[in-house]
Amino acid sequence: MRYPGNKVFSVLVSIFFLFTSVHGADRIRVSFPSPVAQFISLQLALKIGILKDEGLDAEMVQMRGSVAMAALVNGDIDYHMVIGGGVAAAMQGLQIRVVACFVPAPPIVLIARPEFKSVKDLKGQTIGASPVGASAPSASVRMILRHFGLDPEKDVKFLDRGDAPARLALMQQGLTAATLASAPIDHVGAKMGFVILAKAYELFSYPDSGLVTSVKKIKEKRDEVKRVIKAGIKANGYIRANREGTIQFFMERQKIDREMAAATYDSVTKAFNEDGSVPEKGLRLVIEETRKAAKVNRDVSLSEVADLSILTEAQKELGIKGK
Image 1 (cartoon, rainbow, N blue to C red):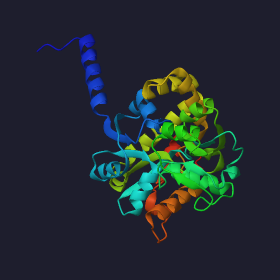
Image 2 (spheres, rainbow, N blue to C red; image 1 turned 120 degrees about the vertical axis):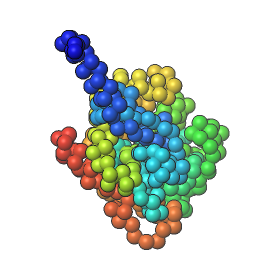
Image 3 (cartoon, one colour; image 1 turned 180 degrees about the vertical axis):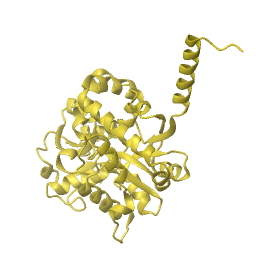
């Protein structure tokens, strides 16, 4: 019986280990609501190989709202990136928990016509917002107003109209005084002569983008959950440190030119955290806003909507002291 030579045998062994390493990776499906900037952490982690380095073969799926929550419970997806949606689902009794946060406050600004010099000047005015409900954008405008001493229920009116470009058009027509904008619409608005009155992430914490998964996943695949969390933290580090690479990613992912991609980067970068931590005060705000929107009268504990034990493990392995 003849045995293969050492060189041939080495090649065969290399091919075997390459095959097993590729096919041995954990396959996961991650959903996100839209390609806007605050949800890029894991999309970027896939693009530049961070997820692969963590032994994860990931597929990104664009999916919104209750559809994503149902898919998460059914196992059709493994992770979702909207913290507010996960909190709302958990409060409804679904076995879903927040396990990490990558953007602790929405990178959203309140933009107004130039005759308005401060948020307080908006008293008695109409603000464009879509929709006014439990979503992070609408919650943000209410909290911005409260921060500056205005009552969002009494001191202003809201006009629900379409997407951000449509709301900018309403401002141009003088039908509204201000609206919310996220990157790069804030840049577009500034070029139109509008002014930024407030940036949500500079005023308060309100966890926006992060990682939500099922209780079943937490119990059965803790190591996988940990590796996804670590990938998100590493991606955030890349975003904060690598302006050019992230701008290129925005250009490719959002199909925008360099000017818009650079404006997006400059607008949102500070909103990404460095450690995946879920700020307790901010999470309590999310719970409170969700309770109001859903008319839930009972108290809701943090443990009912979040499980941060794996995050702590991931931070320790990365040499991070969590907040």
